[in-house]
Image 1 (cartoon, rainbow, N blue to C red):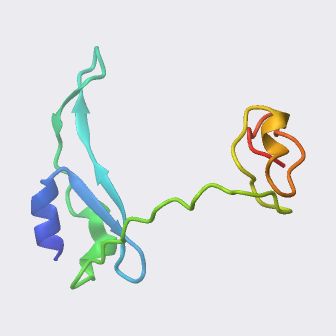
Image 2: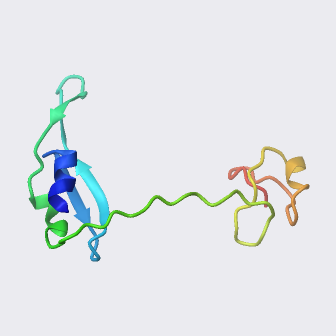
Amino acid sequence: SRSSLQSGFGKSAAFICDDECQLAEVWIMLEADPKTQLPLGEVPYGDSASKSCVKCKTIKIPGIRTCPPPATSCKPFSMGPPCVSDAECKKFKGCVRCGFTSKHCT
């Protein structure tokens, strides 16, 4: 529920939900020292920023998604395996060289 989520974060958090009541963002406001700009403490955000979650009886929290495994070959319009040199890329199917800026085989 929104109240249990709020109690976990404290009064400084604002929750932003999408149209399906899935949590999209959490905003936290902190006060900063005027000279050092280091955080001093939490500042209550209020309900105005959390309006997109107010209509939700239950807020869905998206699961953690893992990164895809690194590529093992080169295919058109896809990033190939990571590399440092052209020689590395020649051992992978379809790969010719190491991209200068991407540092992935092409």
